[in-house]
Amino acid sequence: MSNKNKNKSGIVYSTNSDYLKQLHQEPETETLPPEKQKLYVRREVRNGKPTVVIKEFIGSKEDLKELEKQLKNHCGVGGSSKEGDILIQGDVADKIKVFLQSKGYKTKG
Image 1 (spheres, rainbow, N blue to C red):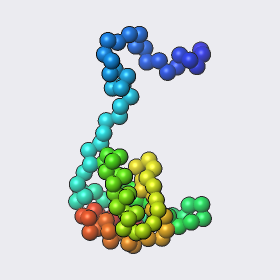
Image 2 (image 1 turned 45 degrees about the vertical axis):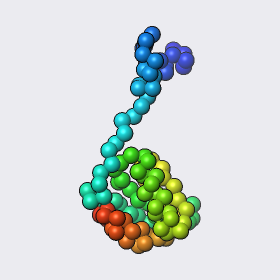
Image 3 (image 1 turned 120 degrees about the vertical axis):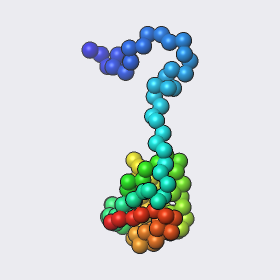
Image 4 (image 1 turned 90 degrees about the horizontal axis):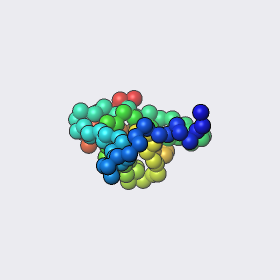
């Protein structure tokens, strides 16, 4: 079997112009309020540099990016978010825990 036919979903023709958009959209997860979330804060070493990883955030990508931005501004460091985790550069885990607890999040780790 050739590779060119593997991506076809079996639809020959559709009159709905938004069909492909609906097919590839993932349902957006609803963001839980901070009181109901328990975030896991962990110190790690990545590429020889200290990094803090925040895991188990339940919510939309936009809310994850917003929390990442707030954490980076509060700590004065860089960072990113990948696959539902927030990565903050530097050994600032204690500062992050205090900030998250002041926002109403429960922390562990």
